[in-house]
Length: 310
Ligand code: TXA
Ligand code: MG
Image 1 (cartoon, rainbow, N blue to C red):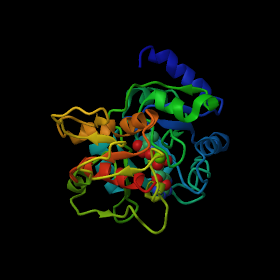
Image 2: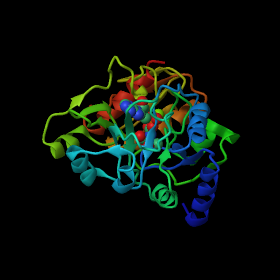
Image 3: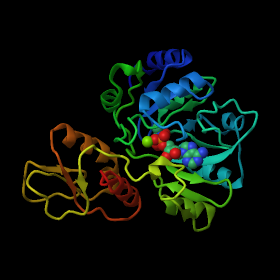
């Protein structure tokens, strides 16, 4: 966070040389590479052990840069004005003359784009003459990273650099919306669907379990801490780490708090880091208290449901 100017320079140096680096966003950390370079993009897939048919999100500074690569429409502009930069990813139509690496989109005619809010990321983009492809900075199917140390835990020395921007403010990935035709949510995320509906003034379809597996946030197993997890638990087993959202009067050493006051934003922010922490403490099982299915609670439950498929 500090001395950012010299860190941004270093980050740029590695990216220009077609290396991949860790970058902070307001949602989760990303594993970034030059979106115009096949070499950089192929490295991302390899590092993440991600199937090549699973397309990446491209991150832009603003709408001007975006229009070099894809077509926009009225719905896009409405949502862009209201929520960007912020935790929303758009599926748009790719322009034929775009310089985007074909490996990003799996040779398809659509592309996922977003405008991250984190100041360090924005500063970095201002210094580059290409957008950044950046999936979440974790090995495929595992927990996303919300701190620089998480990124290090995932990739160790196989990446050259991590731009440390502190703990992610939102802590959960962006909401993905396809707005090419009828707006459709493909992944629940950090931005509430109800807010999007207000702006577009219509009810929005949610297709997060589509049979056509285009968004892997849609794969059954995802966001997994790598050990079994149970949801909606009133009484945990003795050997389970128990994740709670409201302060209890008793103190037990396997009790861990996502929030002490049922604050769901806080629960989202702490979710991945606490899952990571209890796993690293050596617990073999995790139980989570019931989370109200409201607002961002819906996204939290979506992630827990997928994590529980382990
Ligand atoms: O918050 C976020 O979105 C984070 C930060 C780093 O920006 N990124 C992130 O990327 O979560 P990733 O790769 O973990 O998830 C991207 C999702 C995947 O589910 C992918 O299948 C979907 O976006 N996606 C990418 N391109 C798509 C497309 N053309 N059509 C449908 N889904 C697409
Ligand atoms: Mg991911």
